Image (cartoon, rainbow over all chains, first blue to last red):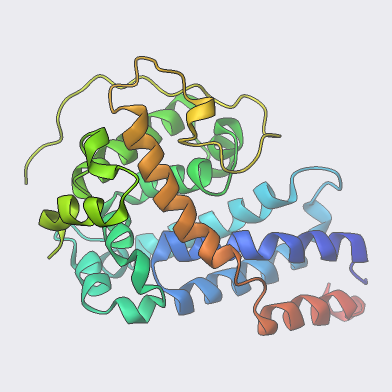
Length: 183
Length: 81
């Protein structure tokens, strides 16, 4: 059966954000592209289970998130470990991630437990409501809120953002103040 | 490892409808000066960095091999199903 062009366009329209989610989750562009590809293969193979008119992004994000989690259970050490080895890899080789500019933030993001990281990204960057994020992660809305809050608190700690003085309008000032957090 | 300060966190005002713009987190306009102990400025800063990073990736669009994949599958006939 041919894919309805309207559905196909919805899928394609979701890909940039889906891919940004994947990169933010796993910290590696090649791995993220593999995840996106696998997600799309599965989604298109089961396109009949998508209800037209419902939330295509939420549907695709759910598939990708579940793929990532099942991989993550198998390869926990590679994705995250208690010593932050994965974060160290990011720090040592920011060029591998392609975006040196954000490496400090990404190192901090990678140090979060993955359940907090995914909640923060879904709500804070992907733009999902708490309800949609809860559906994507298969948990309660309150759990998502709690994870997002813990993620923010931990990031603030890791990035040494502690008060309004730390991030005034002057980027250079912030860099100096945050300098203790580097290396 | 030092522990995070134990502050009581209340969730920020939730966006109850999913229809709002995708970048509501941390925006001063949607954050009341409230019981959020982390501080709305801190949250805003984190939100900005997160979105800046994320949007950078979003702006890369659809990689060609993925666009090709979707179109190829979309054009296939019944044998794939």
